[in-house]
Image (cartoon, rainbow, N blue to C red; front, side):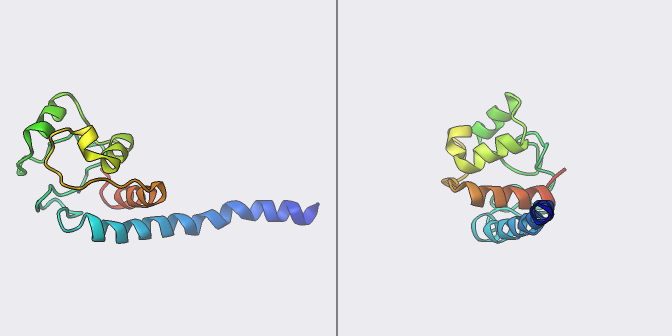
Amino acid sequence: MRILASALLCVPLLAFPALAQTASSGEQLFRSQCGACHGMDSRNRVGPGLAGVLGRRAAAVESFRYSNAMRAKAAEGLTWDEAKLRAYLQAPKQVVPGGSMSYVGLKDEARLDALLAYLKENAGS
């Protein structure tokens, strides 16, 4: 019984390296699928810079030219919390129909979790 209790106490400790791996895999995913259009800083590229994206209202980067569809969603109150960002990364055209982002979406939940972990660590508010 003592061995089982000791083993159970160690289980939560084993999860912490997985969190680091998640953000690390998210960084690789960001670089391969997002980095050509978005930076993790405030500079705009093809897409707006993502510094401070979590908690930011949609279409809020003044120096970026957003699509009419994205500006309309912003006027409706769209804010990039984790749930909205998750939905947008899964299916951009469903969240912002008529938007200009050409990315088709990320369907794999584990990869999406990794990408969001990376964004939370590096592009949060």
